[in-house]
Image 1 (cartoon, rainbow, N blue to C red):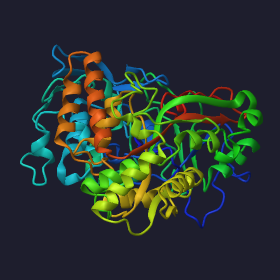
Image 2: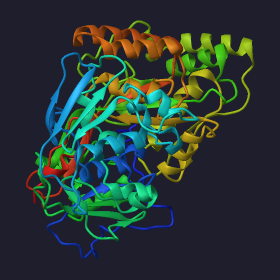
Image 3: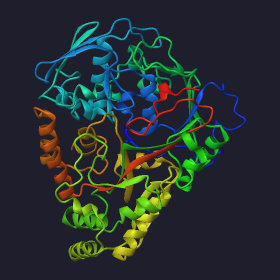
Image 4: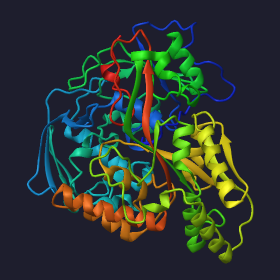
Length: 535
């Protein structure tokens, strides 16, 4: 997902600055059986193929069911799929389980999937997650700026419960990724007005909107169990309320007071005390999440050879180990690659990865080389959303850069995550910026293809390298996992050589739940296993 969901991102997308406490205050009249959990204002209406950030993603994944779903260990299980068969990992026959319905009572059919995927791929629809359909035959014609086809030739409806998928080449990840949000089905009614649909979505997942006013923008989103859900992750609670806060400090105070049931991000101010504060209600575990600093090539001093030297210099000017320990009390790990250290196949000793280590002498030397090309002018700014718990580490990074390189380096706050994402997506942010990724399914290729494919709409830094595209394609087409991991390592070595962006740290999640909750577990990607929260 993305902060998926980059990720993405674990940063909160929360209340505008004029709002006070969220709907989860002590005056709230919500049913006490409902699970209250921290959330944030989604960037866009809740359309699966156009939701690529964390707080929209966590809601979308509750509202929809796919061919697969992921348990809290990241293992994929059949959800709507009765069978997915292939002899060559290139041609697939998919049969759906019978008698599934959307919450408007209409049946979920093979056409519901095929139509949704074709909508997501069509270039005219400009969906943020369209890149996931790249492997399917006919995607290039459909996704073009001037499409020469409206539907992908690789998708064929056989009957109400059966469809086939032809890929351009074999893919080692395709079946695993079929639980990812862009592959969800859509009801026929969605296509009449997709934006309106996203404001009041009709899904087939374990939850549905509580009512037509369930999404109170910048305040909360209310979900209730879907009685017609037939899959393997039924809700074990009476519903979910995603509550939007101005800060994690406020959310943590509500958690301690019993006004919030689960919180997936303990604020920096409580990282040294939360285990004592919460006792056996504290949760700590490594998760597949990361944080990077990116800069787009249009920013002065960051294109070409000069930009490469400056990105490498800045990376080596950052004391990641000190920041992870002093700011996060060990709940972050210095980044060693462009994915996450918990993922299968992770290699912490990639060629060239010394550039991710603190080395002031080398940083100064590289900066001087860049100055010889074009002398540095201005201020080095790192944009961050001030409502997402990022101020302390961004300021620490800026101070490390400032003290090492002798330049004016500062963190630049924006009110909300949405503010930053809109500018990053438009390519107009004009400074460096923090961003992250929270895994949507547990493979390194999910992190890499989403963020660094030349044609991905979630390529935050607009990195384009045909050689990387070729390596990622080859890793997907590999005959076995070991060979795929070997090629992924080559691809990451290329990303390090080009310093596509600056990896900073991976997450060790620090979370907690209230004493009103009897069961709440974090999943592999740092999100709660929402369906299985019990009160």
